[in-house]
Image 1 (spheres, rainbow, N blue to C red):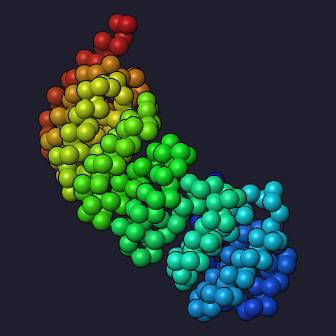
Image 2: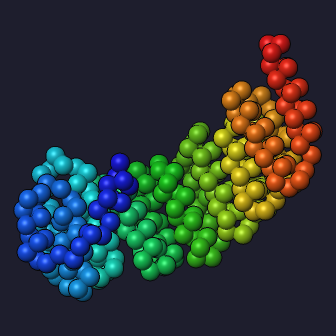
Length: 284
């Protein structure tokens, strides 16, 4: 819901508006984030950070406390403004204020993401996550927080710290959370140009959890995205031998046929195996 709302307010107004137009808009809809956001953007686009801040402060006074999502959008917009146009001191001040109202994890994660998105500064984004998010218990229980910091560290080529952070994640996460973390990091390894590391992680997962069709699917998709059709076909062969849910196996066979057709492979072998599986299911 929040992402959809952020996309809504991030869309530029269709027509150029004046100060008076914006004043009428926020007066007519003071409880909604969108007109306030657009008014702030009007001043930010004119490089007037003081007036942009003033609009957001007015919005925080005007939007009632029970409009949690609308207020959250304003706080995250405030963070983005400070990352873009503010100082380190003003950014920290806004983030601390926002964290008191909408959670340390959410606000500081947004700070890191904004730094990464606006300045391509993965190293600084990683430091924010390490110092402001993972230093707290709620941050250490978040799969997203651990994945994000690993992604920033990978991008910044801080490879030794990637291993250390992954080790720390294994001490904080457990069960399905740890499995999800490992799956996502393995995928990141593929995307960062380290497929062998990704494969090693995926192989450990499917060995420990051979009936997790979701993990097989992600592993297969990573190989396909990496251009390794033969490896993907081999994984599909292995996965369809596992005792997966019926719907999952059907999906895998369809994916396998499509892959073999695209690479002019042995479709007959796939359909023969699929038919044998169907006959076996009918006997149960």
